[in-house]
Length: 389
Ligand SMILES: O=C(O)CCC(=O)C(=O)O
Ligand SMILES: [Fe+2]
Image 1 (tube, rainbow, N blue to C red):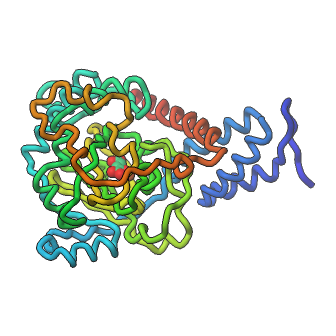
Image 2 (image 1 turned 180 degrees about the horizontal axis):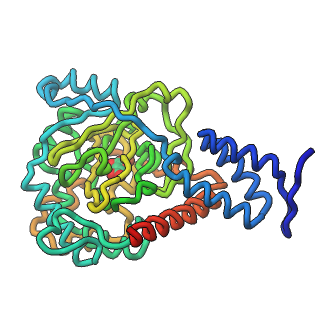
Image 3 (image 1 turned 180 degrees about the vertical axis):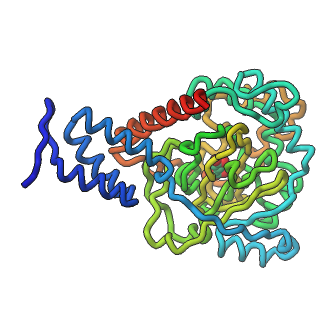
């Protein structure tokens, strides 16, 4: 016998709800939530919707697959053997190096960024400002408060100069080829502590950047960054499976890759990064940020994209991140013009960016709404707990 609840906007099958909840309780979170979602959305029942949000908030940690990291291979010893280096990159889909970026340049860039964050009220000031201790709720990509700081940071000459840094360029030339050059799209990540739900989910860069699949990202933290501080992890060998479908996620980019079951046999690899370390991966490699469980400090990092001359790129790779400012505006206060419009002398093939490769499935609007509600519930609870303790 089915027990049907009826509300003002229709009914739902109580037994089906019970089954979905039992699945969630027994650990089959993804399937259980997906079933409950279907029933709740179709019923339009407010109480059931509330229950769904509650369950999503309670199980947030399970939305990001819990990954156990194996250590990344440290490729420094291969730097003198270009063919071994490239073979390793082709096989593993990443290269990780210790101590490449000069510390004084990292520190200088970090100092300029934390000055802006302090002035914008994001972090505590004074002597400890270099620790980037967060104040207040997380500012998130897309929000006006986020852009108030980001629009200033994206103008920093030191940010863009880091993509051209000589040690980094030497590594890029060895890993990719002599004509390797950075895209002017330089990205800074301003990741708040204590909000693991916002960690950048598993994804490929290809749908965002497109152009040549040999496009290779270089990621570096602007200070020591252990796994628990939200360092970057890579799914080894995941670049060999083509472009994966997308689903909505609250983290940077709002897109996660849907990982096929066969990926279960691949290894997630990571490291406690130290300042100066550098991670490279081509645009089909699945990677994710580890959750920032540091209770106080923001994770600040930068990432750049490189390619060889003669290969394809899309117009967004030649624009500043978020495309809110023109290059002339960005260059206004620079000391040197050496790195301005440098790509105009490079040889590349401009190809159109295909929006279809970046589209989310139609149900993403509901998904985004539910994740937002669940996240604000989690944030409020966390704040209440803190004020009580
Ligand atoms: O730093 C992050 O959280 C994301 C970095 C990333 O996805 C990238 O560098 O492509
Ligand atoms: Fe990425």
